[in-house]
Length: 109
Image (cartoon, rainbow, N blue to C red; front, side, top):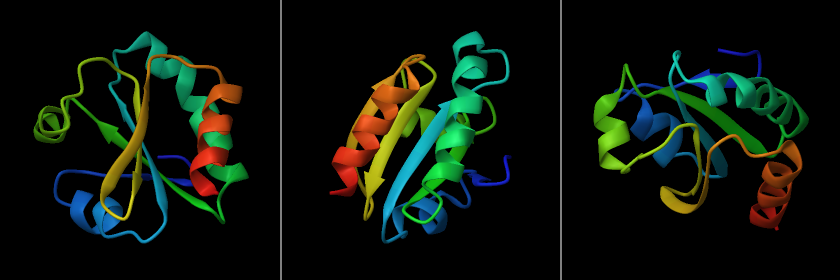
């Protein structure tokens, strides 16, 4: 877990993500995933940059397979954007920081 990110499990998903009143960026990842390792520092940077506007959580799909299954995560990393318990968008794969920022900015409007 980074300084500005929160590790979330199946047990804390409801309270940390679904009940959160603002925008949540959930990063579904796994330790063995190469593209996840590329995206991880970018997610940490964005978590710091948007710390007042956005909650960033990380979900290890190997440790929380029920969440990965429930949300039909087919490829990782998957970046899921959730507002008031509803999935509003998602990005799959190692996408550039600019593309993630654009998505965040559009969802914060």
